[in-house]
Amino acid sequence: MERDLLAYEKDLYSKGYCLIAGTDEAGRGPLVGPVVAGAVILPINYHLYGLDDSKKLSEKQRDKFYDILMNDAISVGVGIVDNKEIDQINILEASRKAMNIALDNLKVKPDYILTDAMKLDRDVNVLPIIHGDALSLSIAAASVIAKVTRDRLMIELDHKYPQYEFAKHKGYPTKKHLELIQKYGIIDEYRISYKPVKDIIERSKVHEKV
Image 1 (cartoon, rainbow, N blue to C red):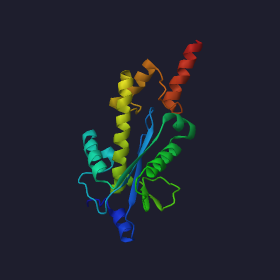
Image 2 (cartoon, helix red, strand yellow):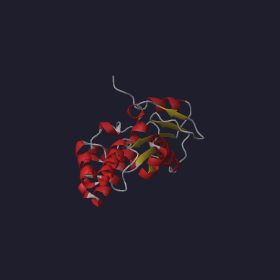
Image 3 (cartoon, rainbow, N blue to C red):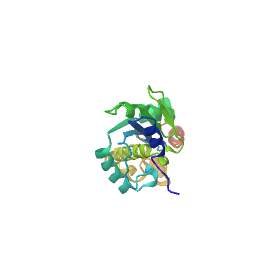
Image 4 (tube, rainbow, N blue to C red):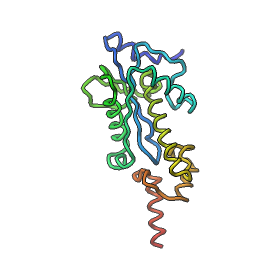
């Protein structure tokens, strides 16, 4: 049976809510760069064939849907929390903060918020949905906005530091990426609280002492 990605939204429409914001983040797992959140308010009963959780889409599909959503959505907000703050407050709290920033950056105030399993303290009702990016069109839309925005930031970083190949792995701890960190060292954009990065820093300190 085909999933109805508007099931949560339709239930809320029936209760009188009209401006439902979905929010999701991208970039919890990478070793480098910010965590980015998107917030999207879609028109009532909006349909976009093929839109799904950003992880299930190709880069080309995400880019296409990003452009459509930026044009069609009632409002889109983005929130960015950099690697330094991730190291200070941890990735969960940084993701939460990015979502709150994205929601605050909406030009239209939502009357209900759906999140991808994240509890938020807001002045309107918030419903955290486990696997929300695969169950709600509004959250799926936010996941695409977040993912494309973050990927583009990583491509910018790739232009600055081409030797790290950020455009390919987007900062995730692939085997090749870890080899490149070993070879070229840690730059300022790395998350030093993340174990692979921390381990490399510790090993380099040991080598310096030897």
